[in-house]
Image 1 (cartoon, rainbow, N blue to C red):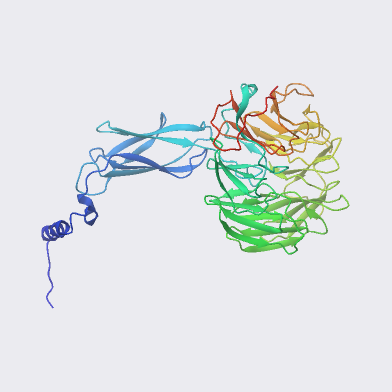
Image 2: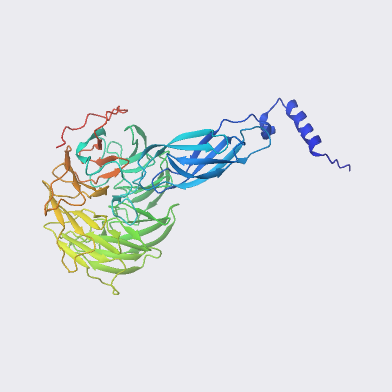
Length: 518
């Protein structure tokens, strides 16, 4: 056998001959390709507090370093690394960064400036916020800390943006927002509808079968329960069904929004069962609570799952379970049972009782299997509204027509009076949402209200803004990217923005909104 040994020059010449003989296919020798135009791309979801990577390619090798900016803020110098020995525009760089939590949603500029040549390459990126589950986070709270557009100073200017009328079945369920797409329960076909959040354009229906409550969306998948005793997972980008789980009995229903925490899904059913699943559909544990219906959605914090129960005799309470095993750690009686989603904040867990009680417990328990509240307050009617917590204040609605604000840390006594309240024209079953100093909540008087989160210096506060929808507001609003979203019980999906917006309707569902702000 004869072995040939060629030097680099000979090998390069042979490669060139083969390239010409093949018709000049440039991919056969990539370093000889024509120089690309400099460009910048960003990987990762661009949201406040998110980690992203800024990538530069086709950049001049004449610059050993470039200065990379996010708007006018220097992210840092980046070294330009050559991709090959041919061409002058074959350099690349990569810079990781974290988007600041106070970044205003909208378009921003990423810019790279060569330290030697001064050459500028830039790209526009869009910063979004998500509200991907009912309570904003798995521990609850219904508080968006990243909102910077709507504030107490301009909330009175809110006007309808686009609306999609009469095609949804929100009831107590709420829409969610992920990567610029809204997912909402469609009444016309029993599916989740995916809607472009900027324009109101209908994108596609998910292959859900009569979903029952607010979904949770993560990593391109929508998770939800349906009216046929199943828990489902569907692709968020195509709508196709990925997997489903049949509940143990055909008459069990899922009356609550699921939660996703640490890679596991949690939810309860009307048979008193609480479930833990992997995101791929593997059941990891089931716990059956004694007798009640699991009506509230769960909250998860520090390895503990909290969930409320209601019995047919209107009793029940709060249960704390080990999130890894499902074992019950402790429980607490709450009069009438718990239908609202618990919230965990500052070492406390907060719930509302169907007997009218607002109760706060130590999240770590009390050292016994049955615990009493650290503090509580009795409103004048049932509390099915889920609490919101922001800046040390607890906000919750009651069927006595009031929204209440409490010091979340308590008052040093077993019974704590509210810091202030706001009176509406009917029961509040909607759950409040807090963002940038404003509390939003719906009422059965058909209005959506905005109130100052800091109070007004009086025992009873007047709304900063309100808007009359077409029917009672049972669903819960949320705020993201300078927009208030609300699923109305009249079947309409509403948006509100400062000053209003004259967006073009893209579907037959769009119509002019109600003229009802006051």
